[in-house]
Image (cartoon, rainbow, N blue to C red; front, side):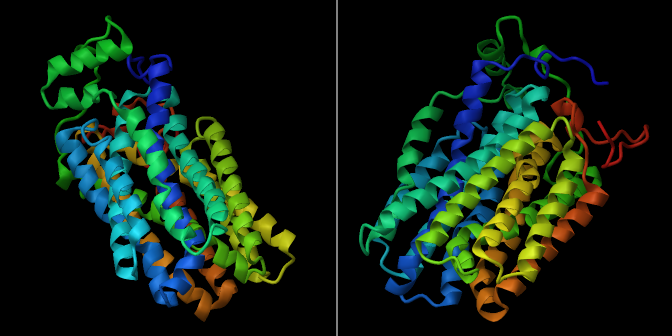
Length: 452
């Protein structure tokens, strides 16, 4: 039973809801820019004379950028604050998205998408740290997980917009890639005026500013003294790689990697994969959009379960049963189109549990001083596997066929299930400073799989 706390047990306010909505703009753009390339590639490949290797490289370029941006964004958000970078990173996405319209060769397109990925990667630790540090414990899991729902909303929007623009002519792909600037501008305008995290301000000794934010958000009766004490020793960057934080970082990186490698590969080359499964042309793009809706529904269902079921059971079951859907696709690649779509839909719904926990776990398991850095490192490291997997999809389809590719995706899901069975923590019901604290050396440590 955890102690009551004025911030962690505050009621969910209009401010919290607005902050969650505005923070979700980054994941929306992430899903949009990573998915639109799959539709655009239909025109890009023949126009720019891309072989399968170069297609994979361009498809993975944004993921490589996320790897770099996660490191930089995490460090900068812990050093300079969450609010300062909250809009700057989205401005970079807008500028580079528009610049893609004039890309005339593969290298120029690769560089621009690399820069977009860097800005997207930087937004992960910025937006999630800000949201986690304001949100009451009861609503923290669902609101952080809801950011992933917006990723799939962005992905679904990309497939719809892409299909509409595909019919506008040979320059349709240019309009597709540049279109990300429109939601980017809207999100930047909405984010203006968002206050800084009072937890971060207090840790930096900016007490008066922290006090002002607390009164603005929680009312005149809340003061800096109401902020919970977080352990202040062994919380620098090196601490993330040793002691209890080293184990937490290792688990988050492995679980995150295993949950996104198959998913990102499907999103970057959704129409191509469905085409290999005998769903071609516009039907493949429509199928990709429908699968995205299933991903969205799966994440929504996981949000309802994350507090009732708990983090640990949710991640384990999500890996196991989504992997079974991929295994059936591997065994029966020539099944009727309806069966193929049903299995893809099953995978999309069930994998929702691992997707929402990508945002919940990293923010709950690290203290304020290094929360942004930890989220940045975890997202960056996970993108190494995602980028490699995305790059290899067209190569794998050409060499192994669709069946071999699905077997590989199944194996990755199995690794995620096994690792989670051994290491997945349970943070349900804990205040943010409690879930982030390392076990005291004078008391028995709380095992990673302890229940709430």
